[in-house]
Length: 612
Image 1 (cartoon, rainbow, N blue to C red):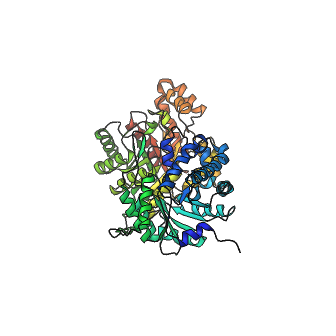
Image 2: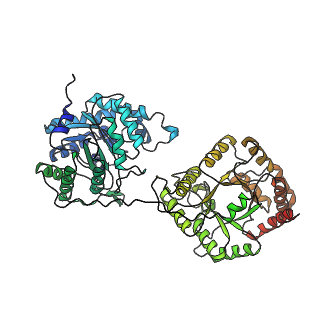
Image 3: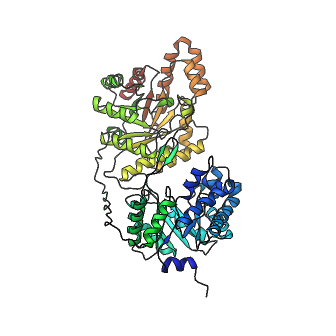
């Protein structure tokens, strides 16, 4: 019969154990120009030992190795992948050295954090990466593992299983929760605990997060499963000032009161995370030794159950026209560059008088700042009654920002949206910008899809579902048609209901794409048509604008037309309309620069064709 594990015995039968605090944050503050806190294990080992000693002397029974982000994936992002063994081995060695110097009975936990951003395409080696780090840490002599700060429950379970594949040491597993005791992916602490309780763990709990109260809320929700609990919260919400991360000034007594509440909720391992120093750990220690009772009852606000209320889901005129098979045309306009919308509204009013039903609105075209397309759409629909199709790119804002502007636009009545990638920032006024792109155009479709389901992109219920009718761009003249086809299929899977093609000047591109697609469009498609009026612009579009192909024979027609290039451009546009009438659901006309009303010349011809 194997001997009982000393840590497990102590965890289950003795008084609650005290863990350390924000080791990585203190090391980063003490050692300048680190690529990551774990680099200090090989660059500034004396600083790491000093931090460990500070926590031990403050009363910590458990200290974590400085290896939270020392997996191969994260180290590779800092060009340190060749030092994965050295950094992890040194992390354990330095923790053991601090224990020997202090002379205390201290357990050493091998800290293992998540891999960072992992999508389905690069998750194949996830288990190997976790197992590799765990094997190194056990080989150097850790007493247990702290698998911590996970936002995704499936990732945490995968990490636990990977650690178990190479080690039988005890595992403390902790997730990060918000003030509502939910992960950022929408998993409740109660549900997480129920799943983790099946995995024979030493302890489960919460760490990192929004501060002690959030940690206690998660602890309260996790307490019904009979598994020892652990809680190690941040000191509070961090901010940035002068390039430095600043944490709140929590008093020691605040952390002593936190420890008292954690003990009353059944926590067996209590410590801290980012921002917690030996001062807070000493306060926790004192509260536990005194067997302090909470001074006031713990008041946890009952999480308000968000029930999705029905939203207005009336079909848009644009959607109805496409559904009924009516030929649809829209004119693309650019929002104003300044802070006034009078000119834009006047233009749209003129288009309305000419019989135009729809306008689509660019979103910062050529990566130059203009009025936000969704806000412009609100103004247009309110002032003119013309239905809009605003473009939206994930280039300029985060997922949270995208959701925010979409919810605002929806509340004001905007329903049609075209999800586009957007021109790269480098081509516009901000050459140093890399763009945001937390998601691409496919991901933006998924944002819209989730909102229509009544959920945020993170999976949390919103108060009222949206009813966006959203479409996508597709480029039949793309250099890599296989890739374009795959992306188009992904956009369809993400719920796209219509598409507008990249600008085309030759119907043969459309024919080939449609052939490779199987001969039939799965959703209504509008042809993008640029009314070009001079040879120079045709050449520039072909050579300078990504994704646009102006075939040589079309360029030659413009060149030969000379001063009559505008008439030739109109003829080319009309010929293209003739060529695609039976292949698409309509057209999107991009008018000549600074002559938006000229688009009516193309549509007038197209209307005559319909009437004939």
